[in-house]
Length: 394
Image (tube, rainbow, N blue to C red; front, side, top):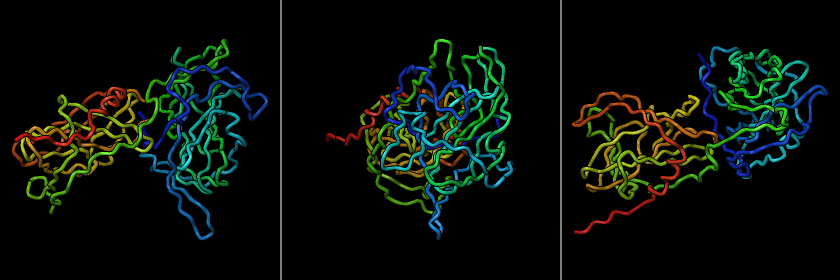
């Protein structure tokens, strides 16, 4: 049972990398040692949005890496020393392109064989002079041979930070080469799965190794290209919540002039996937001129690998609190929830609404919901959520 839940990283795939089937010739790769043999590397890569740095009086930048949930019981060993570095990351990943105008880090890796061991190189470009609260892996980090079912347990790391929270100090822009060592994989291993390296998206990552044909292959059929951040008509706040009490409807906030859309079928949703967030729009129908709604809270999205993405916000409305919307009977409008960003390889998610607390109101419904979504289908629904002003014939 996994005890470490990775925080949802803000990640985008480089625009130059299309979500298509791609073959790579097995070419010699710049090695850290003469005995090193290339096995695989990330053929599609992500960009991680950096947390904001603090600057001290000596102009030294420090970043506290966002918490990896539930790792509080792990020892914080302080600063690690003797971290291997890479002079030119682009020589290993010639197609690497970092977007301009924003602070992004490439998330890339390489798997090699060296001195009768398998070595996973996890590259990290320093976004500041000091990065604290880092995490690499623990004994949950393994390689699974999918053909035989054999699990190869990680042994140690370089630098020595195995199973510990740590800090690292290096010149901003330096590319660090965190290394995880495993037993040597057999020559017969072709399809593997890597677990337990959350900051590099290895929570069950399928990898095909270089075979006798001299090729390796990975197929990403998820999000081909990230969306632009969507814009929605901002609802008008008629009256704010006053001493909010879910059991007293007179304390709920009131809104009108919602983001209206054309009529759609019941349970229609749309999704926008951006580097910073995932937007899930739900079509809501007004059966009366004034109705109450409640969205967000503990709602989550769960991808095909079991990773959860929390609801961070509801655009223009309270997150979790019940509120009123005023309009016309027959209106259709959008409520848009903002979730943590979904990685580019994700194809499907499940939308989970936990059972809520009972509240005192006629027709109150606090039942939960579990609904599977195909991301491509929801992205195709974006056009259904274009703003459509109300037309009333009297």
